[in-house]
Image 1 (cartoon, rainbow, N blue to C red):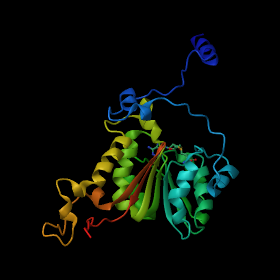
Image 2 (image 1 turned 90 degrees about the horizontal axis):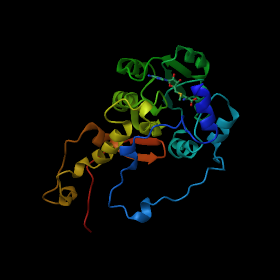
Image 3 (image 1 turned 180 degrees about the vertical axis):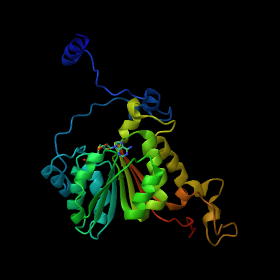
Length: 275
Ligand SMILES: C[S@@+](CC[C@H](N)C(=O)[O-])C[C@H]1O[C@@H](n2cnc3c(N)ncnc32)[C@H](O)[C@@H]1O
């Protein structure tokens, strides 16, 4: 009876039972430094166009793959450069195997595409003779991840489309970024909008929180140092510095709606010059 009543209320727009619960404290707080012109509400329309790129066409031709449309331009921007040679890709989250097939089609045909999933039935989506492999285990199990890396890694691309639980995203990134991602590799975490949905938040710091901290870590060389420390010919110049592994190996971070991308790149001390 109660279910039926709820259904009717939803039907007539009086109750939105399926709405995700917002982390209001995180989602609504904006600095007073923003002028009102930048924070006032403006109307946004529903998307009408579909992405115009090859990857979307591959997606549209297959079934059993669920992706948000706006991801395709982001994938294309970050993955295009990896297409001209065989790569190794790890995708966390196999579901019905649709995305594994999509990546196989998109990347160089000799590429190795590895999917991991906790659901044993996902093994059926392995196509070993086309170098599409599936291993069963949890993205929250560092020993399992290490085994997958021993067997297939290191990877040029790691894509986390797994449980979308924040502690899983945190553990996988922590376990994989250093040992399992190649120099020049790309680590992408998608569906991070779930970090704002209480159902998925099961850690004190969400993955978005860690990502924001990594923005600070990118700037670690400048903590407590002055500009002349970076002018190589200057007497105050530093020749070496001890930085956290992340600060020393993050080329850049890109934030999009629901996706965060990390480029792995060995860094050198920044150089400043007065000409
Ligand atoms: C969003 S689906 C993956 C979709 C797939 N990448 C695609 O685009 O077609 C998420 C998958 O994560 C898997 N999953 C859930 N918890 C997991 C865990 N702890 N470790 C690995 N995979 C997990 C689920 O079984 C499910 O198949």
